[in-house]
Image 1 (tube, one colour):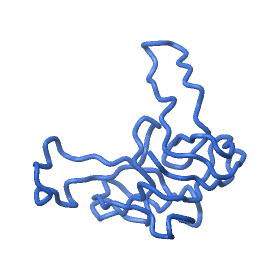
Image 2 (cartoon, one colour):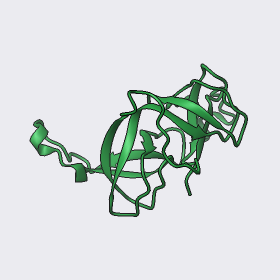
Image 3 (cartoon, one colour):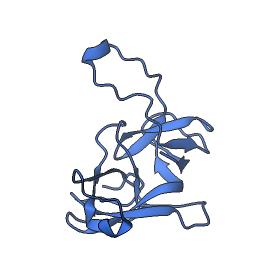
Image 4 (tube, one colour):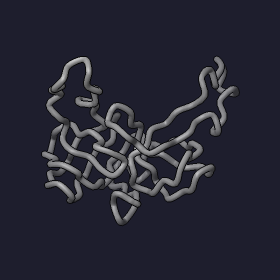
Length: 151
């Protein structure tokens, strides 16, 4: 399901956001936050050692790992283009204040960066303070905001 019903909606960066392609590990909708990964030691010291299939993309499951936003709908095993820098309209899953750093709450949307308070210390999964960009506009939860992606 797309986090923004309109899918991937770029606004600035010359309308040509910076992207990289990867093989989708699951069905991904345009506008969803994704994380990129690759096989261990998949790349050598020369650019010729890199192939697009060296990278894989999956939906974000926590804010610790987010590389960008999918630009189109794809099914598992197909190439997906991922916007790694640019300004995009994203769904808000929490309050977003203009000018603040934002984090991915899930693959479906963002919120202003949380406080970073970890309730149970070492025994709690640390997921706060992982900014993926900054908000240009403010929005309440379950609305939309213009986000500058800059992980």
